[in-house]
View (tube, one colour):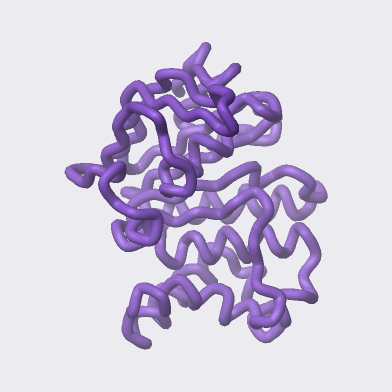
Length: 221
């Protein structure tokens, strides 16, 4: 489904990703684990088109993502929840969830269908819908970012450090939401980055360990 070949990225003249290759198949959850600065966020931003690789290839099925501008990545069914959440403070939670679908020009029935599904997967969002984005805690913002990614991520969802800074209760709720997601959308591919592999428990099907921009270990179960 997603195939990355020999991807190299430099930022401010320093190499961050070094000839990195990976494959992520439909219906699987892949964890990319490594220390801060190892290249995890840059990998996801490369898939989303937010940084420009110096070499390599990224394909989603038959789509050459290297030829698609960043705003087209969402159109091919990729959802992205960045580490810093990026919740719009002047919009309500529901408006934050709907925003990417509105940008894509989806119809109201389609947006409502997607919102209903997201609320089934992340029921904690239901009482938050009318709340301002500015009124959310950091953990609540992570849940909203997950929901927003699911609104447009029909094929692939990228979650950057989703468990970082979450209180134990919220971390459990987040993990339960991911379990419901796997049950309700068995063909969806998910990539999760994390600094601490212990926080992922039994979520991923494969774990790739990244160091200095290259994968050094792969575990599959």
